[in-house]
Length: 156
Image 1: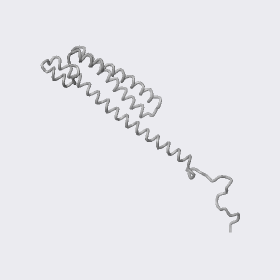
Image 2: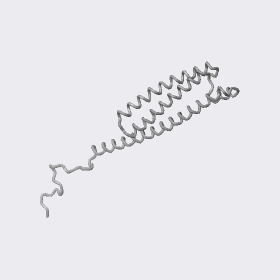
Image 3: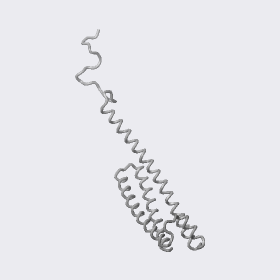
Image 4: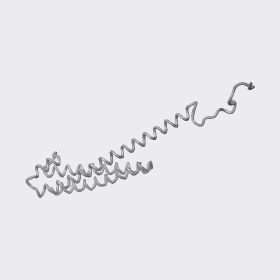
């Protein structure tokens, strides 16, 4: 059971790193600095791969402890008769849930920011294309070889 608790602690620590990456990704999106956004996305991807590896080790430790295939709630129910083992697992699982909820909220916020920025860029690009291709566009002037005003040679 000690190996399982240690695996939970490592997952929790890595989840905190992922949460920090999510916060930094959100700040990068707000700054609209593309190189910073790119760096943060790569960092986040690397941290998620580490978390995936730790999660695999956690599942192996859980199976070795005799609780393979169970959810956290099922494990706690099975450990009710042993409160000295259940309490630390309960506390770690609660912390993991809290950090996971924070990550989810930050990710949702970052996605909204990214979609909003993308929408603004699409609108700006479509306006720029319309200005370049339209016959009547803002700032357009009559060509110099055609005098403006009237097509008659003399005014009466």
